[in-house]
Length: 361
Image 1 (cartoon, one colour):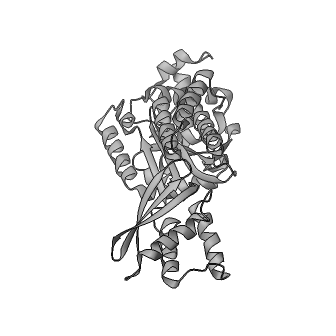
Image 2 (image 1 turned 120 degrees about the vertical axis):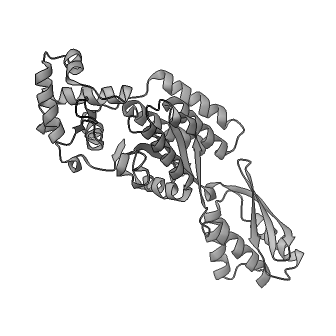
Image 3 (image 1 turned 135 degrees about the horizontal axis):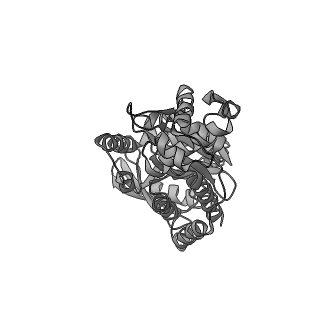
């Protein structure tokens, strides 16, 4: 299922406004652009159209399409390219999104299944991002929540009088070290007691779930801990389960694909701005996080995504779920506006569903 950021009506152009001839010419302009990135002229269009039309007739139709805001001319005597509005109209109203071909399906299944064997969830997501990048010749992206992993064990190690290291071991084998502040004069026994208390309750829970359970236990007076030990647990859970701004993780693979097929200096500048945007990870995380509230694939074309508007990029993303059916992240690609939407959309959709099934096992 494709969830559109901008509904068809927002393009201010209805399919009924175009007759069969206009639709066919517009479709050929868009498909030529998606294939080559180059403008196409009336003479070439008249040769490839299935209906017999002279270059002059084609030019008349192109003029109408330009007035509707669907195409534009980069130079006075050049051919035409689709506008962002035209691309959105094409994706919403004319493009047919089919199923994955068998080759792409097998490739996705083999690479992700291979990554799952004995590896952590993050390794699977990284491999999925790399795989999408390779298949689409774009940058693969994954947004995941750090606190979604299910925990197995925890240990505390004193580093300094006011700092301790928490070693968290997840059920899938991930190990993460986090530093937290502890009260001055905290005895070593308080760290041991805190670890024992957490380990008795931690198995199979996410940090968010554990935090909720422990807060309730403390409120109900069921946590028989001294005040210092409670402070260790409270400080740790606050920083681990959403108190910090880095509770979301962005994985990007395949930057080099964005440098392929550059045709002009402005293309290089466009990609440079996209790289700058990707470096501003928190902004990317905020944008991608919006897709977690969507049902199915979400598509941003050019300036529809304010973060990437200057770089003229398109983003195709889909949410993925964990074993409980809860949406826990987003996966997809970022590339030029001339992405092969009809192929990439089902690819992203299938990958998100496959990752969800793997996380459920």
